[in-house]
Image (cartoon, rainbow, N blue to C red):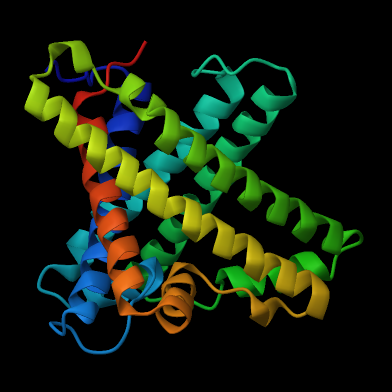
Length: 263
């Protein structure tokens, strides 16, 4: 399989951004799996808690700095993709929705990058998504904005489902240059990974609807809250399947970072 060229700046954004995103999902899915099999204490955690764990590890400051820069790169890549229509989504309704999804998801990873960098420099880490929702809800038409986020999360769930079912994620890789076993491995990594994210985004939508109904931003939970809800509602076996899917999704993103051919 041919590696991507990494000489142009947008290739660099793509490579380092996807490397950072892949590492986050591998860690989140891996820790959730470890809690299910009893190899880690506590419960499944989201990206912010994972970042805090890294802070206490040897060379934690270096790791967090590199991770933050990678998350900023991913944010930049998603906005580049949204503004330049790199994926040729077009300007019809579906194309605009896809490009809006790129911008919103990129911004979320950018916020995680800000949180990570804040830990490095020792500043306040109170600016989480709940606090941002509080600020949004205080603005004119703030609840409309939360409703838009709920619709965006629902669309993201549909987008993940479409990619999992129709296997369009394979278009991101040069499958014609893979062996049969290699292609099948990446195919199942992608199907399970994107399939697990359907559930995650549906729960995100549920949380945002609860925010609207209760007019209370504390009803929103991040990825850690999603995994806790799955654990409590569906049990450890289903949590293990979702955690495995997230882990495989992270691994698949790392494969994309290394091997996707960009235009």
